[in-house]
Each structure stands twice: as structure tokens, then as C-alpha cells.
Image (cartoon, rainbow, N blue to C red):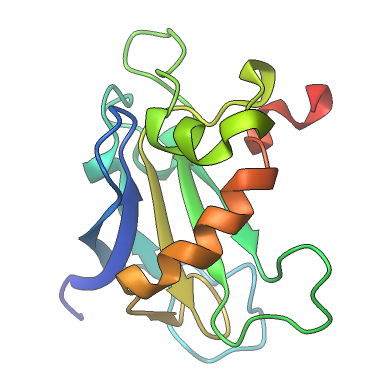
Amino acid sequence: MDELTAFESLLFPSDGRHPHMVGLTTSPTSMPDPLAPYSGLPMRLPHPEVFMDYIAEGLGSRAWSYLLVETLDYMNKKFTHPYVIFYPVVSRDGMVFPINKCIREIQGSHYREACAWRGNIIVAKYSDSPFSSMVHGSIADFPILRNYFMTHGSPLEFSMC
């Protein structure tokens, strides 16, 4: 069986530090990729929980969720290499995650606490399917992601935004 593979991804730390690159580790899994049912590519399970503070331990992928970003508002075509945003959903102690100060600063006057991104956010890139064809990102992806975060609140709070 294949070994662990890491893909360069962008981390938006909740403590206000600047975004920076991290190696998002993935491991092979025998589960079929739900987003690429006709692909013969093996699915790789990412492990963003490694970079998420206060996340529940022992839950694996059930402690985080993801959101696909294939376009920005008003784009006519999808990105060649779309993004997958990983965010924490189950905390270690049942409390809410801290507001992500980095994204809060990016949002500026668009910031609304009810729609705040919480915890450390990891953003990876992919080509065909987020779980079978991840690719390396770079800090050059930051302007695109900044534009996305500037106008989009957390998917956990969409009902209020």
C-alpha cells in the first residue's frame, strides 16, 4: 500500500499569525471517492486535523468538514485547479472554536460575527477530485483565497448569513 503523501497547502491560523504554507498529509484509503465515482484513481484521505487546535481527538475525518471552491463570484469558468477548504466542526471540549483572527482581518468591514470562520483553516488545491487528485498549492494562491474569504462567511453559519 502507498505511503503518506503531503501536499503544500495554505494554513490560515486562528491566532492572527500570517497565512503560511504547510504540508497537508494524505493517506491511502480503500473507500471510493464520493466526488469522483467514475474515476479509477484511489482516494487519499487528507489529515487537516493535524493543524487544527482544540479539535476532538480520535474522530478522524468526522471532526472536520470541507467546502469546495470552484469559482469566485461572477466568474464564467471554473478554476483549473479548484480549492478545498478544511474547517473544524467538533471541538475537544464541546465549546465553539475561536474566531479566526486572520480571516477576520481579511474581511475588514464585511466581517459579521454570526458568519465568522472559526479555528484554523487549511486550504488545498486539486485537479479533478479533492480526494483523489490533490496538487501542490503555493503562497501565490493567497490573493484568490483572500478574495473568497473577504465575501464569504463560514459554511457552518450559512443559515444566518
